[in-house]
Image 1: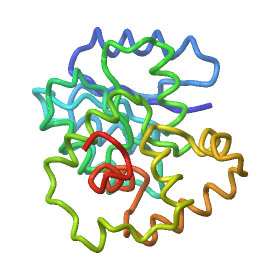
Image 2: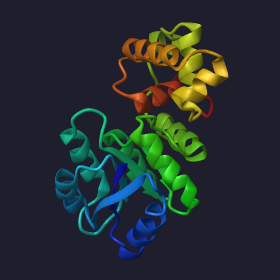
Image 3: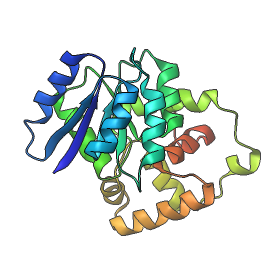
Length: 218
């Protein structure tokens, strides 16, 4: 069972998400909060696997809450899924820097929300391919260009292929199928790639891919 927490200042949004998610047999809503500070306290108490986080709330923003939740966690969970209208670019970019693991549009299909939560719970990160490319490409554009040595790419051809597919929103299993290799091989190559790049997680690795042109959209 995947434990989910909902954070949004609008009660009707939280109620709608709860109804949608509790129709799934493998998802359980274990907590709700209407502000960033409430979210941090609730997460510490409820210990969810995934937090669906709004980014702008009158009682305390989701960016600060995301940063605190990520700092408090032990391992990769809870993962933070930023659920956004996408017109709040600076908040989205700030959440990315704070350690959010994925992004989704608020007007997404119910099945997409459940799918996103499952992927984050498995540690697979980026979930909405359209949002991923648009957000990360813009985020990367706003950051200083990497130095020439980094841009040249320290990765092997196989590692570059895996990072490129990761940046396109694929999971480890999808990458393995696309490259006709085992999932364990993907995980091994990706781990070596992240070590070479000095990236702390899959999300930073995707940012590197867009900044250097390994992935499209820059």
